[in-house]
Each structure stands twice: as structure tokens, then as C-alpha cells.
Image (cartoon, rainbow, N blue to C red; front, side, top):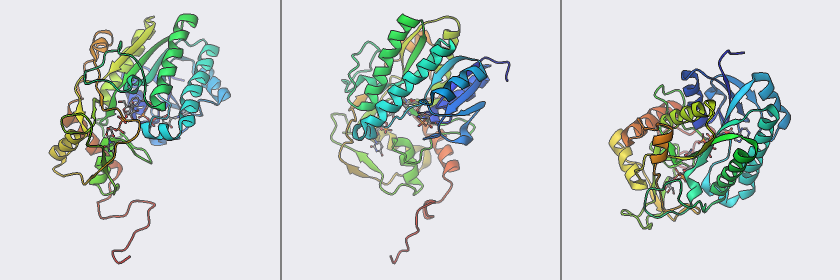
Amino acid sequence: MSDRPAILVTGGAGYIGSHCCRALVAAGYHPVVYDNFSTGHPGFVTGSLVSGDLLDRATLAGAFTQHRIVAVMHFAAFSLVGESVVNPQKYYHNNVAGTLSLLDAMRGAGCSRLVFSSTGAVYGNADSKALPETYPCEPINPYGSSKWMIERILADYRGAYGLGSFCLRYFNASGADASGEIGELRENETHLIPRAMMALQGHVRDFAVFGDDYDTPDGTAIRDYIHVTDLAAAHVSALNLLMQGHRGGAFNLGTGSGFSVREILAAIVAETGRKVPHVVKPRRSGDPTYLVADPTAAREMLKFTPAHSDLPTIIRTAWAWHQKAHPLKADEPVPGKAKTSPAA
Ligand SMILES: NC(=O)c1ccc[n+]([C@@H]2O[C@H](COP(=O)([O-])OP(=O)(O)OC[C@H]3O[C@@H](n4cnc5c(N)ncnc54)[C@H](O)[C@@H]3O)[C@@H](O)[C@H]2O)c1
Ligand SMILES: O=c1ccn([C@@H]2O[C@H](COP(=O)(O)OP(=O)(O)O[C@H]3O[C@H](CO)[C@H](O)[C@H](O)[C@H]3O)[C@@H](O)[C@H]2O)c(=O)[nH]1
């Protein structure tokens, strides 16, 4: 067992959780990854590993006692907006019921510090201004609703049980670790930047811009892209505050600047020198027009100053990771897919 304070990192084998584990090590903590590998990767794990599901109460309770956990970072969730519209049960069950199970385990173990992965999707369809935390939370898809429900549960637990929690509302996580060893990698990737890069590599053949009839300057939807390394730094700051006795609250993690889908595609051309082949399809259901953070509160409370979230750095680190993760050339077959001959 490590002498360092042990932090349970649910979802630590996933994209954002794995980057946070590395930041935890750099800050003097010992991450204990708790993951069921539904979307995570064994090769991404840093620190100790407990394989288990959030809803497996016995394994969860065992992780707290075995590793003497002092705080939790809770990333484990399903997080695809479109899928949540089609299959809301999957989202409420895993995200809300899974979190209740985690909170029971924390209370059972006397652990009262939590950093929770919330999302800009709690705000729903905003107007075209950067959103402060006081903006009304009216999510427009089940994924955002599941996260907002958890935020409300955590507010009640803060008051009633003294469970301190930071709800960090990330906007669009992007980019990859400078080492090139970990990055965004999912079996059925739906996110804009990784899909566009997989299209460049020939692994995605049907890349589409979803909707060019939004009320935005170029007709495509606008998001606030925040580098995963900057997110990781903010998590360590929030954890340090909890360790000092802070009770927490909800904070936006974004840059305050929005970019449209077409601007992202232009940035990819600028960094890679290659155009992403695409068609335009109708809007994806559940997608808001505009989602940009006002990060003022996080700047003050968490000393949050994004250092890696300019578009060139986001695209450059993501592209370096994709070339390593999917090293095939465009004309080679995708693994697991039958090769079709030109005559077929
Ligand atoms: N990626 C984004 O842009 C973004 C933006 C805002 C918020 N978030 C939130 O950040 C968190 C991490 O997102 P990510 O992009 O790294 O996703 P991810 O899918 O890469 O990681 C999620 C991890 O949680 C694990 N997991 C899921 N359900 C589990 C369960 N029941 N028990 C144990 N492990 C489980 C998965 O195996 C995976 O390793 C999520 O809560 C997500 O909602 C992500
Ligand atoms: O192939 C694609 C994929 C996406 N998009 C568009 O690109 C934008 C960004 O879409 P992503 O799927 O990359 O990300 P989302 O904004 O849907 O959601 C992400 O950011 C949200 C917060 O802003 C949530 O937290 C969520 O977990 C996270 O997946 C959207 O307008 C989407 O319609 C395309 O045009 N084509």
C-alpha cells in the first residue's frame, strides 16, 4: 500500500479519468482506479486497479476499506448525448443509480470528499452568451438531466451529511496528454474531433456535419473546447480544497470562447494540412445550438487558468494521439471489418 493519500477514481480507465490519474500522481496522491471497462481501457490505468461496477456494492465497499480512501473523483458514467435520447433508461440507471450506490459506499466508509464530473449539458439550450453557474439548469437531453439530478443530490448531501463535493461542469473535453500515451479512444466514437480525425485516417467513412441550419454565423453548432490536461489540473485544485475542509460547489470548466463545427474542421486543416471529407446531415437530436462557459468563478476559486486549450494545441495533441492509436493508413482495412474488393 502506498504512503500517499489514496483517491478512488471511478472511471479512471476512461479518457478524462486517466489524465486526472496522472495529474494526481504528479500532485503527490495515489490513484485507485475503479472501473468496469465498459468504455475504458486497461492500458490507461495509472496507480492501483479495482475492477468493478458502481452498482456492485460489495466490491465498492471493499475498495474503500482495502485502500483507505480519503476522497473520490467520480468520472464513471455514460455520456453520449444522442444515445441518451434514444435510451434514457441506460443513462438514469448507470449515472444516477450508480452515483447513489457510490454515495452509500462513501458514507459507509466515512469518506466525505467528492469531485464529480458534471457537464455544460446541464444548462440545456442557452442563448448566445457565455453561461455563468447562476444560469438556469434546464437540460434538454437525458444525459444532461442525469447529471443535473446528481448535482441536486450532492447539494442535499452537502447540507444533511456534511459530504463536501465539487461539481465540475466541463464543456467539451478535447486534446490528449503531451506524452502521446493516452487520449480519447472509444469503440463507437461519436465526438466531433476524434471522429473527424478517424475520417482523415479512413477509419470513419460517413463523417457528417450535423446541421448547418443553426442560428449561428456559419450555421453549425457552437461549443467551448477545453483541453483534458487543463481539466485534470482543475480536479487536483478542487481536491486540494476539499482536503483543506472546503465544502465545494458547482463550477464551469471551459475557456469562455466558442467554436463552430466548421471552425473546428478548419483548425484541423490548419494543423494537419488535410481536409476532412464530409457530408452535411440533419441536426442530431438533443444537440443545443450554443454552449459556452463563463469560467470566472473557477478562475477565482480553483485558480483555473487553461494553458493548453487553444485550438492549435488541442488539435495537435489529439492528432498525435490518433496517429498512434489508429496507425493504419487510409487505404488499409479497419480491424475487424471485412475488406471489400473494388470489383465487389
Ligand atoms: N468527454 C466530454 O466532453 C465530457 C464533457 C463533460 C462531462 N463529461 C463527463 O466526464 C466523465 C468522463 O468522461 P469521459 O469522456 O472520460 O468518458 P469515458 O467513457 O472515456 O470514461 C468513462 C469511464 O467510466 C467507466 N464506467 C462507466 N460506467 C461505469 C460503471 N457503472 N462502473 C464502473 N465504471 C464505469 C468506463 O469504463 C470508462 O472507463 C463522465 O462522467 C462524463 O459524463 C465528459
Ligand atoms: O460526427 C460529428 C460529431 C459531432 N458533431 C457536432 O459537433 C458538436 C460537438 O459534438 P460532440 O459529440 O463532440 O460533443 P457534445 O457537445 O454533444 O457533448 C460533449 O460535451 C457536452 C458538454 O458541452 C457533454 O458533456 C458531453 O458529455 C460531451 O460528449 C455538436 O454540435 C455535434 O452535433 C458533428 O457535426 N459531427
